Image 1: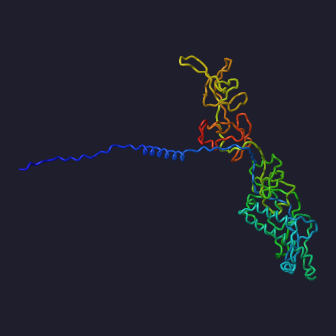
Image 2: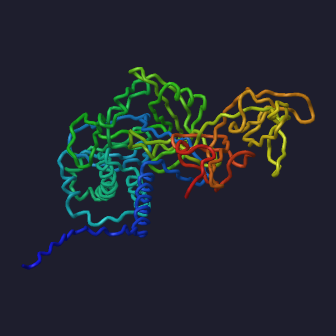
Length: 466
């Protein structure tokens, strides 16, 4: 009998030893760090520096004004085709020929024919055309596209003037019958010729309303050469006085400010020329406040324009130019100068403050502090190391002073040393975006200093990381 063998086969699962991969741990830590840095970057406020430079600001006030002049409209005495012989914007003397009215239309046919030959522009005409083109190019706006047509008529008038003058020289070739049917329009007074009407000719500042300042409501009738006119139709007008006025809309406060100036410096945006305007105030027909700026020159330059863009130059200061976003107001303790001394290892400013030792004995300690300004025998001291109620000792005296008085200063945060350091500023002038501050002050800024662009993103003594 065979012997039966039994075996107990037990399978045990092999456990691998834990192998720590240092490289993977380091990679994981770095990855988490990067994620934290990226999150912090996008969620935190960034401190941006600004380099202080010298500059100036002008009180720039831009207005669209209405030009009012002494203007007289002249009407045709007969019907027919009109032809002009004086260029718009040109000064004519008494009894100068301005236009003719051709009852037969033969003059117009002759103008449109090639009988006149070629005509060349003089150097003076070319110079004026170039000026017109440059002025139009500098002031053109899509919102006032109608000015394109004014420019077109102006250039066309120059060319037609030359053609018509040549025509008059050859008028005999048309025959005596035709010549007798031509009416000549001579000026009855001296003035600047204008070939348009708009209904503002007889208006005074008191007659204006707010609607008159809206260019969308403006209607201008251009008087064009070679067009058919009826009897009593307007054919031209004359600006007869070099004195003229630009009327602008302002509030009562601004009107009073300008009236106190009496004369205001004005820049014309069309050509950047400057002039001084005498200030007058008016109450418009609708009760609004208007300011008139009167001039005794430059009328001819703008004689064809009813709306003139101007800039009032009220004030101009120079100094250090900084953005308004950098400006902050900070509170300080006011301490009499005699209580502030220099001491410590670096001979810094500070005060002797009352303190008590562990055993209750009264003593003094030197507290270093920064002086930010001085005024009326007092220093403005940093409030980071002092408190209301601190008792200060006067050097070499038994007199004491208890801190209780505070004051504020306007300033910026200087970051030249890598941390936010408050510097007082004296604002000379300020507009909506920038301020001009005084330079070379004892506790202030210097040119090329770096300051925090947005003061709301930093606190004093914060370290600035590039």
